[in-house]
Image (cartoon, rainbow, N blue to C red; front, side, top):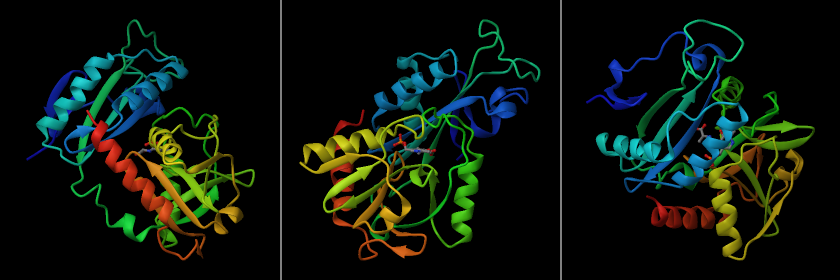
Length: 287
Ligand code: PDD
């Protein structure tokens, strides 16, 4: 059975869904996106993702072509129509199709944004075997643009990072800039030293992860110590634990960085505890 996807208000079988060759998302990577996970058939932190979407659009002078309520309804409709229990909803909004190629932004009065949504079914996402083994990461220079706080669809360099990691037998890459770790290709990066959770402070250098915000809140509630500051790869290699967070990985332990084992080279207790709390609380609060 083919997936039902959403394009500009219509629910269509994926084979019938189309977007123009002149769409600015296709020609200019002029678009933003969100990934919201689904647990127990419900949306995790939808309001957080919707708020970041509105911010990304505003930072790029894009008009939001769909209301918050319509966005939520469409997410729920797709989850229901595709029978998703565990997985995700991908949402992309581009500046639309002006009917030709031009560097200048089109007039938003005449060119409305393109809205696309689809689901990815991932049974067993919460009980992922990868979380029990942990990930290996490599470090690479952060060559992305300087507005990483905007969740744009310009993902070529992160894709290259993922490929560089695979080529070295690792799972993912951590970006390094001015000697400090910024974040992972598609996740926020953390280390744990003497019980303290350390993660880079928010700025235009990193994406303001929705999972990051939730995990730091849960950590504080569980009386864990959190320090928001940048750290070097050498400091990470000397850490007791490392992990990443994202809407699809939740809390995922990192057991090796550039070939160096972190702690005992197995998933750490802080990461495991945070993953447990995050999944439990997210499932409870999902809508
Ligand atoms: N990526 N940093 C980057 C560069 C990301 O691409 C992501 C998310 C995150 C974590 O953000 P959040 O916790 O809100 O998912 C951090 C998504 C999952 C993706 O591109 O598929």
